[in-house]
Image 1 (tube, rainbow, N blue to C red):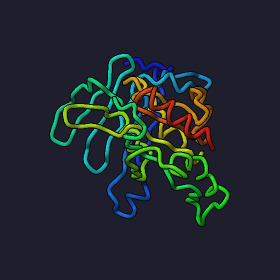
Image 2: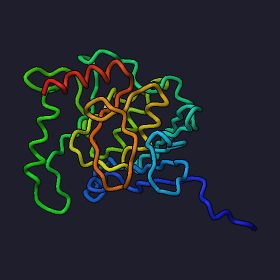
Image 3: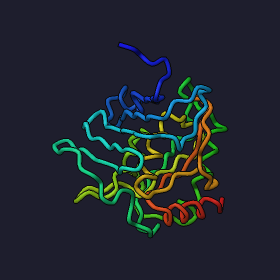
Amino acid sequence: IEVSKKPEYLLIVDPIDGSTNLKKRIEGSAFSIAGLKYKKDKNFNANDVQFALIGSLMTGSVVMGIKGKGVYYKGIFSKYEKIMVSGSKNIDLSKACLEIDLDFGLNEAGGIDQNGAKGINKVLPLLYPERKFKHLRRIGSASLELMNVCMGDLGEISGVDAYIDARNISTPENWIGAKMLIEEGGGKFTDLDGKDITNVNNMTTPFSYIAAGNHILHKKILDSLKLR
């Protein structure tokens, strides 16, 4: 058997996102896999993801997709089914269900980063002095929260409208697969300035982002944050 010395794909795997939940026996952990065309220089574009999969470690539910071929959902007791309308159909921010990561100042090495804790000001305009949305959720796993944005509508199943992580600590393995899945379904994934996230030079550079199920809701969230 002749084996090619040139890899075809680069796989980015996050085996456990939500490790603190797992350690504390709190249900809310996920794994994610993203496949990109291999590049010799090892620098890659986040938009080069060709396929991705996110799954719940607790329930076994999975969202997966291939670029240009749609997004699919598999529940606990179901087979893979194509999500006909992935992403949120809701464009009314006042009725939206948002996931906002509020764990600012997280320092997994020990203690609390008080300078990082001040970063909560980045998302306060959505909450104060006037609350601009209806429901707030927080799970403790970026991959799982992004999976909820990917889910869209499949019969009685529906995900959340958007997820915001403004902490600037989320590294690419957490979100790079979800970015493709969300965009494949008509959603939008950008940084806090509304710019597309493209070049990723390593797995340690942290990012902040807004992931929304549709472009209109994304703009409304972005406009609200710009008031900070």
